[in-house]
Image (cartoon, rainbow, N blue to C red; front, side):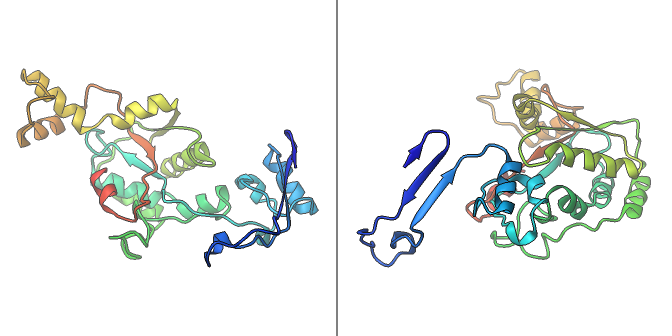
Length: 272
């Protein structure tokens, strides 16, 4: 029975004939199922607590925190949220020690615990165990060690005059802007100059597409060649890397969410 905008009631069909022995094709065990539409996660959470609903879908991390842990279940996906540095052209991020300092300065476990209700895990790689090529050893999270981060920055002769801007979208993952701000706070705590810029997805897409490929095409055009026809040489790639950047909108740090639905590390390796 359908009540427009309110609920949908489904009743088990008693004369249903099971199709083989597959679990999904067996007779339903639940005799009556009522779907109710509620737009606010807090309302859904309140209904669960009051016993007005048995299951609530997509309640969000804030509402999850208001419920006891035995009432909350979370599922996974094939994605992992990462921040990609401009290691080609940014004067600080192209220094290995600065990048190492960044990963040791960020307390990932604290971010997961405080912002995401502990519903996910930190990884030290762009894939997780179960994907071909990934192991517990090469996905172990980086150690949170701000003292070491400061030592690495000193070794790299880090210059805080070179601002690092985290550029990203605001709706890709729950609490995304808060994640940016947390990273900014951790990096500032070890002496880094970091800003946050939340942009429209179309702008983000342009910054994500701005990389070595565009810079190589710039080199080809500058020498009178056609990027659509002429194959770049190793010298062209070296020249592109030596440039101060590409003729497009670049980002110092930008978010990404590589995924491995095929459980194969190869696409991630070729795409990064």
